[in-house]
Length: 465
Image (cartoon, rainbow, N blue to C red; front, side, top):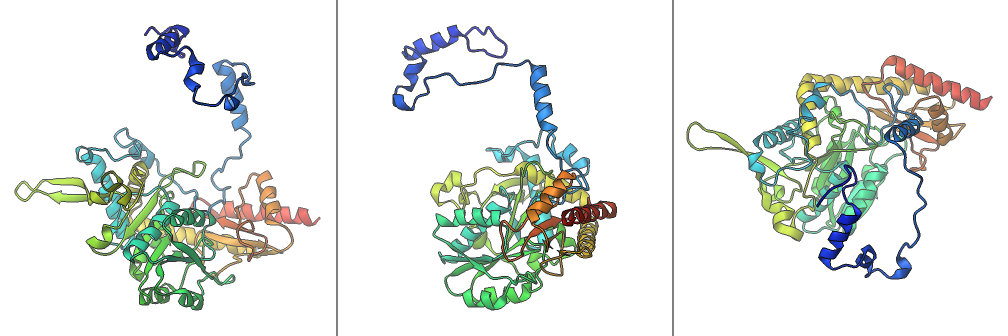
């Protein structure tokens, strides 16, 4: 067909020819199956067209109204937070050979991609001290949902799954969606509102033969380090249930890895490992487990394996292994309906961790611990503020309670001054009063924290006046 326009290739003649070839009188006849009362008969009230320069100017003006989360002035966290990304990470991860969300359908021809994903799996398995890590899930929330379903399969359809009372509300919503269709009941275990720790008596009272798994977070959504992991492990396993641990990978240079306290399934959010904060995505679900082949066969997601020829020169090859678990083979009986993955984010995480090194991970964990505890200490010195409002041993995030004003007012006041002051906890949890969840990472130096505290103090002083 002849094209008469470089950007709008379908001309009147093109349309006429296509309609004639299918035996249609006009475009309206293509929608004859739709009742007339549901058809839009009038023209849309659209603005007139603009030149490219005019569109660019208008969009630039709209974008300038955004308050950007610039380094040092963004204290938002709650699952997605800002970290320094070395220039080498995007330079390597964004090579054209890697930029895809898919593992190739003929995966074995992409040995470079498979090797990179294998290295990702190996790095995470070593850090988490767990037997096997898959090549990625969508995000931590979907990883949690898959963990609950995996626990139910392993434990022969036990119908209950226990979670902490003060977990990430967004993750809880996704978990409940995953569990509803699998007939799994999600039940909360109480946490002490002052210490933030799981109440062991309540956990023990809820554990029985119907519980497939227990989910804990360390550190928790509120940034509290769970100090009772060994006791929780004994209670859960004595009841014949599985222990699922949600962790922050960057904390594991300081906090005990989940494999050390015998977690059966481990999940984490991989966004802090080299991926930017981009309106909440794309994210990376980290998923690992321990156990033999019987357990691993219940694991969702793709697994990259390494094999070697039996004779010299002993050539190595990377393959997708245990693929009968997956949707394209087992259909509705598959362990998961995730048929793609976050391959590019996994590559990014592998590059980031390789550059970070074990000693760098330890230093990162300590720096974040120092910065967050320093921020909590300085905020707690202000009148009308309690920080941390929950717990004493914190890492990266902590709750800040305001005695004389609302969290919403403080949040808006800080935003007017160019600071993202944290996530409002009062919208999700009533036990902590008017509170914000503040996130402090290695990007926040002493000057940034002091400026943040000073701005909070100035706002509170003006509010009282």
